[in-house]
Image 1 (spheres, chains in turn red, brown):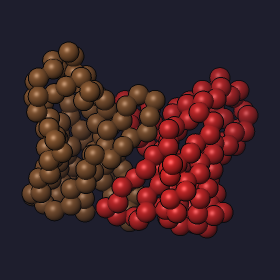
Image 2 (cartoon, rainbow over the protein chains, first blue to last red):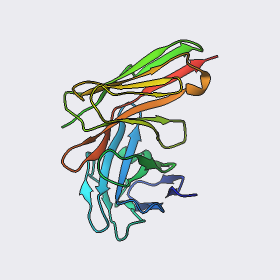
Image 3 (cartoon, rainbow over the protein chains, first blue to last red):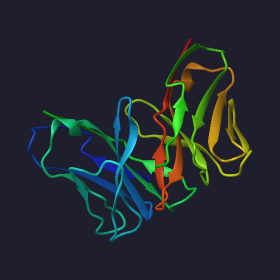
Length: 113
Length: 111
């Protein structure tokens, strides 16, 4: 079934540790996004990529990095996790930049202790 | 910075009641989208409205885009427990056209 796959589904991580959240799509979409969802704050954009080889910063990029080596994969790395990064992380993709549907993964629930 | 304000934040109603959720902004959007999210899942697109004044219907759900393309509403007729979920409006914002979201309306429909 075509779509977006995120891994892991959930993770408990010690503060200070490095962690990479994986995201893979098989729809050949150009644009990919990472959001975090927190109670009362909604979905906030962390980083985006409009095409393979390019990335950009969203609303809340500090403490996170991304890469886009190919069309399908868009990993999100926390270099040194802090408790404020406890959240649910969603990866999404779109075929184009404007007026197109965003497809989301199932999310990764991350707890930093 | 483009912002989307949703209201109400929470809504708890009985089965069979009607409701309206609002999504407002001071900015003009090329389109607005409505997503529905269930617990433990990612958001799923319900509809995209593109033209000012446009009205779209999806069974018991009616979506409207404001004439000035700054606001949208979602009206549910005769709500059912299966309508329970988080409703999110979203628009393409900024020079990069990244999808930005309102904070959502959490709807609970009790049988």
